[in-house]
Image 1 (cartoon, one colour):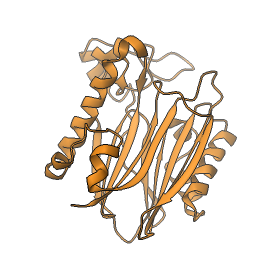
Image 2 (tube, rainbow, N blue to C red; image 1 turned 30 degrees about the horizontal axis):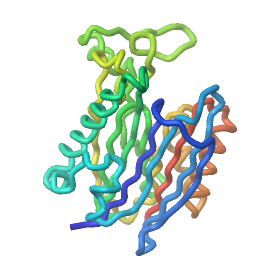
Image 3 (cartoon, rainbow, N blue to C red; image 1 turned 180 degrees about the vertical axis):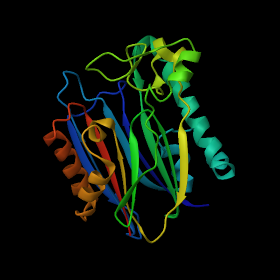
Image 4 (tube, one colour; image 1 turned 90 degrees about the vertical axis):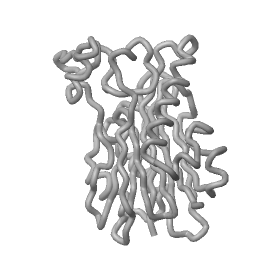
Length: 262
């Protein structure tokens, strides 16, 4: 039916990894290229960021996409929005089912699925972000799920949002995002349903950046696009973005995927 490009960049308290990782790929026509880079932050814990970035034919989609067999191919073609939402819901349930092992573990995520190089679907939970460049102009494709923004929903569920001086707003004084996978102790006050956007890729579309909040805390959307567009190799662009974030004293782990169109 089609050809998928699946890209994901997520911050996770569930997965430990290497202190750094980099790589790249391209589809067989050479029209779309991607590169990624992950770096360990300065916090005293193991690497918490994780990513998936790959091209695949539709027949391989079931076995190899980020959500494994959760995101069913036939359902996706029938209703992409509902299918992605369902995949996020089942991912949350799968993480919660392991809460006895993971304890307070949780995760945010941003996912991009590109179909036949033409239709882009983007979904996110939490503060990992997707930014699209069209002719050099940055446009945020995702919504940062911040506690203050969704305060009413949290309070209606019996929770509260703290605003301690010198700190960011937190759900029940703990979590700095209002939507996340897992986090069982806060689940009654949290949402895990994604915001989902879709857009048609045109000749002006040049760059898509997916990154965890370790990048966005110290860099604007336009600033990231300006850096990435100057570097033809998307892997080198991803490495430059993570290096720049560290230079600006980002304390968090950083995962970054850069996709260059045509």
